[in-house]
Image 1 (cartoon, rainbow, N blue to C red):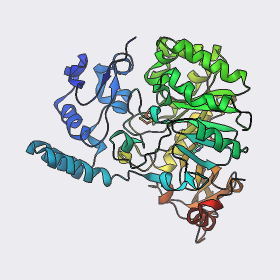
Image 2: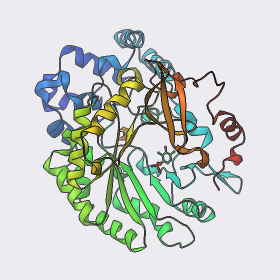
Image 3: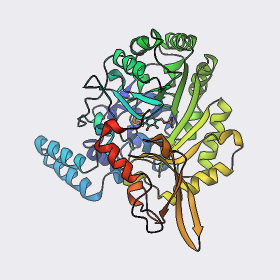
Image 4: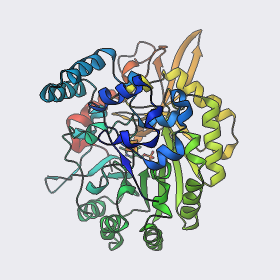
Length: 440
Ligand SMILES: *Cc1c(COP(=O)(O)O)cnc(C)c1O
Ligand code: SF4
């Protein structure tokens, strides 16, 4: 199968283009100036149901929709477009983008480690056991998700010259940090890389015994957006050999597969791709954000987890989408998110209950909403950290005042009149003094 990508420049060539309403076409043009757009022939031909676009989850996951910008921003860009003035279109796009919180959760400033006084670009070390690695050739995707918090890098405004060009620095860092057991390759989508490129990044790790890495994780949506990558692309067989080779060094491969909707699990190609990976000893764990308009129903999540388990995958995380980009379109109040999680969790057997969530990845760590609890006739949020910048924070339950509309940690206040959440004073110290990060 040959990959055909569609962007704002050529999407009118999509055979089903005529099915778009005038409003949808306008939204494409207007929002496409601000937020990134890319899709491909697999998504278009096999995942989107063009007869019911108004309710189609994969259409909304890939194609800009009117509500993804505020009415004000939408009108600003529409006016700029109508003027035909290229300079105005550009400056309008830039000013809107800057109002969409392009750099949430202090990702850039706080997690890039140093070695011998040099910042290690392409490496992030936030949690003790796990290092993120951003290979520079893996910083795009087979298609873009409209909710994605990485949108600034896809439109080229991200100032994070972030990615790493080779794997030697990663190896050196890992040899100095033997507490790290997991490397998580991320992007973009690392599976956009050719096998030879991926291999060149990982080769230094395989030739060194001085690190403690036991699992290489690959965060990818290729099973959802381009399953051929794993069994049909010209270097798919090489990829399987590479995975085998890595395993022969005692290192597991875990695909952290991003699936947003059951429809992504039902094509023959995705089933073949999953079977191929499993038969080569690769583990597959699954995760997705919970998104209004796309997957905000307990039945859908229960269905998704069951399908995943049935195909041999392990459900891992349900996320709350980050506070950036088109968040208003996708956001679900935390209480409702928890209800969806809980109702779905109740519908499945224990084998699906490896999943954890709903979880917010924020500055202090990954915070799980355990639920809303009634204490002496007053509602409170019960939370806990699944991951913490300080490992000692992990697993401690804590409380926040209940608010119906809260959609993110920033909307929450400590319960019982406490001035701070338990971690806040220490967090401030860590952020001001990066070397304090208690990674050891
Ligand atoms: C989620 C995440 C990880 C991995 O955490 P696990 O709980 O081990 O899956 C690592 N680093 C960052 C920055 C993360 O957000
Ligand atoms: S595939 Fe992943 S990185 Fe790429 S746009 Fe979707 S969520 Fe973002």
